[in-house]
Image (cartoon, rainbow, N blue to C red; front, side):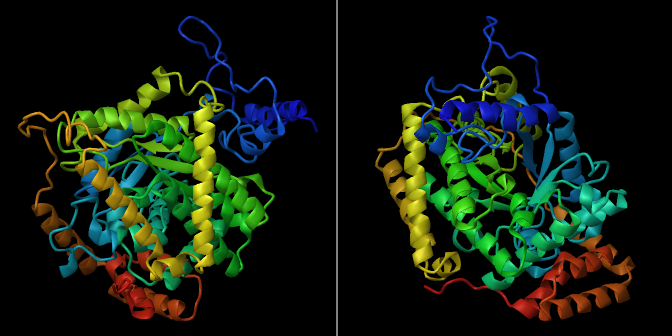
Length: 550
């Protein structure tokens, strides 16, 4: 088939099918002067190099996007990350955001929840409700999603080591709303590997942690096929100080590990692979970020096709969420952060993200206020409705610099993945410190450049002003912890203690017998067993990971 014929086959194939199912947002897309905006700009002559490396949106290698019409069909999901204090307070924030035009929820959990401790545990002292919402039992989850229909809203949950427990709670809340598991939509982060070298909220050692992840893959494949079972995260890798190429490499290397672990457990590739999702950082170097997203999409497609042998397009597509960088926000001249976030969000859109969170101007100081959250959401809405960048697919394709940089990032990331393979894989590189050292070296170099003035951070090492901190900040009332502990005590006092004990004992047996743990966890959750109680049963069986001893 000639190159020109391939373009026509794309129009008659992927494009025609998509338009039949999902018509575009408007009949005509035009500029202010009435000039028509093309759906897809392509070179006058399409050669083999173009087809192999750039191609068409919705077709391998997906460099130009995973959907033929991208944002002409519908905008990315505007999913603002939120959660603080109690479930009731977070529920109020969620309903406010939905009223302001947000199209999906993204839940932030407090630190005790992330590492498997109840709010009444001594390890949770002083941290309850501080960096996210405290969730101890199903009762908290019921409150968190009160008056939010789970058959209409998709929810992303940033939770890793206890991901199975929070997913079980979400499923149980949906059941109480009359929504079956096969109708819920959303994502659990469920990416434990990056915790060992970039973030630190792990509980169990890598091997049993990977078992929990594959158990979720298997259960959702059977019971919740619309739910994304993992969001393989480069975000925290970049926040820890990695380069763009390292972010792509280490994220996709983690993805390779999850795929291979699931295959080794006997799961069918094209059942679980289509529900894999990714999560990337949006940083301020706009053109590098656009190239990064395009390179990641192309490299993952090639990995899935050539390494794992899939022929299913859905298994090759790298679908991803983006969050603008938190590490790049400054406490100095906080209004500058609005500009930074706008650039970062624009990069994500130009790079073809499927959903997006925009950070708020005040997040270098505290959790965001309602006003700053609204401004962050409006940033996305202005990009969507006023900038014009969503009216044509992959508008920067064909730029000499963008294409060269896309190739370079793909090559550098591929070489790093090769080094990880040679060293025995990601788990081996966690144990020997290779990945952590790579990130630390990159972070150190960046900080040196800032301190020497070789890299300008506006308002920090150049263009400073004398200013008094007068920005309104959100403070978490210390009484929140006492109230949460009291609520947990009430649940424990009124639940069926015998049922809890029975379900926890069954969970322990299942963990020792190497059975899928999702149903036993669901049973414990439905009986109002607490997050900490469930995690403690698994701690007794799996042990706790203490990290590499330097």
